[in-house]
Image 1: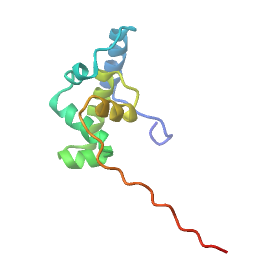
Image 2: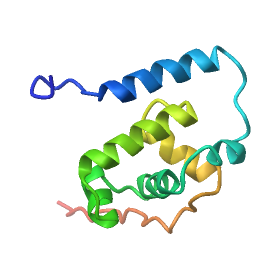
Image 3: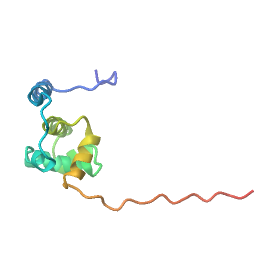
Length: 115
């Protein structure tokens, strides 16, 4: 599946996703700060690193764990917070106050040669 470009989720993650979507059943979600409380300490740490733009491999190196462990954490974070992908997770982390923007560089206009 992976070689064909498809995503592969462990069966346990798939079951958790199904259970979480069944539990939500269209109910309104708790405010952001409350939802952060649903995460374990490690999941909160992984979410913070996602929001800082680190890849799974970089997070694994940073936390001294296997990349598959990070993927499991990411899957659980998405399920617990009802998010679709890493981008939504990063936005969630920012909006909930887990991370703050860290001075983005502005693009410097290129000089063009006059002819």
